[in-house]
Image (cartoon, rainbow, N blue to C red; front, side):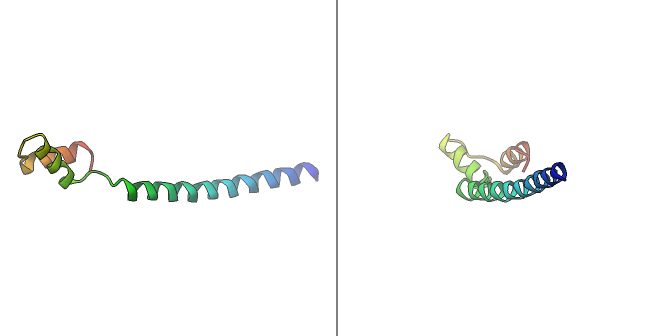
Length: 69
C-alpha cells in the first residue's frame, strides 16, 4: 500500500501544482498586458509623425495586418 499511497500523493501534487501555476501565470500575463498594452493604430500614427511622415490609412492597415492583429 505504501507505493500506491506515494503515487496518489504524487499525482495529486502534480494536479494542484498545475492548477496553481495556471492561475499564477494567467494573473502575471494579465498584469503585463495592462501595464504594456499591445500596439494599436494610434501608436502607429504617432510613430509615423515622429519620423516626419503622414501615414495613409492603407499604410496603417498594412502594418496592423503584418503584425497579425
